[in-house]
Length: 115
Length: 167
Image 1 (spheres, rainbow over the protein chains, first blue to last red):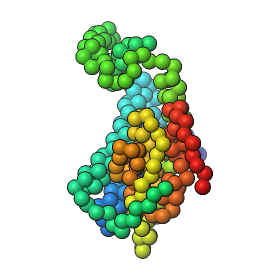
Image 2 (tube, each protein chain N blue to C red; image 1 turned 90 degrees about the horizontal axis):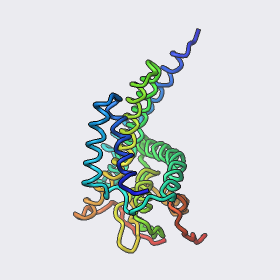
Image 3 (cartoon, helix red, strand yellow; image 1 turned 90 degrees about the vertical axis):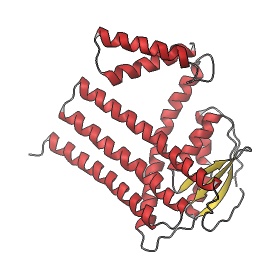
Image 4 (cartoon, rainbow over the protein chains, first blue to last red; image 1 turned 180 degrees about the vertical axis):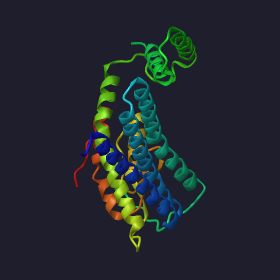
């Protein structure tokens, strides 16, 4: 019959597959979007969620294989990586756009309106 | 509590997690190295001299804010995936200037990072008079930002009073 292991495996596979899908769309966006800032839009978002989902799948998998102190410590370390990606990825995207703005890369179809 | 004590405790907790060995030798090594780091650069982590209750409240409120942010991030990714995979690629990029009312540095950082993570918007610059220059990828996402819901949530984390003028 369907056992616990099997269900967890299916969940892990689905999570990692969704993560890979977001990586895939981010890469296609990087190639398809027309200008500098739009390309950054694609990578800055797809990469974050993709990496986080894949790492989260890994956490579930190792905790399922062997639930002990050492694997819990490993999963906490992976959560620290997730936290770091959450902080670093938007910051890196912002740094790139700021550098582009400062060095005079003109955004496509510029129209500024105030709130 | 003094900020150096808090810094030491955080560093030592991290040491325990990263080393994973709880015998006396490794714990002593950890205490010594954490003490040295605390003495040299104990004033980097917190701005205020004393750690008060409000810091803990900010931390708890920030954790409460995370689920909403993750929900927004998932929406952002689905939106970008839709734009990317659509054959005609219906994007209309433009630059928007958003006047924010946040005052503290930390809330500006959280707000800017949240803008980057949520649907189709990137913070390009923050000017001195608190104007966020935001690059939007389509009209729909700009309207989501202009409702000011995110700013309200960030302000309520760090206990700031902002009055949003309803349109």
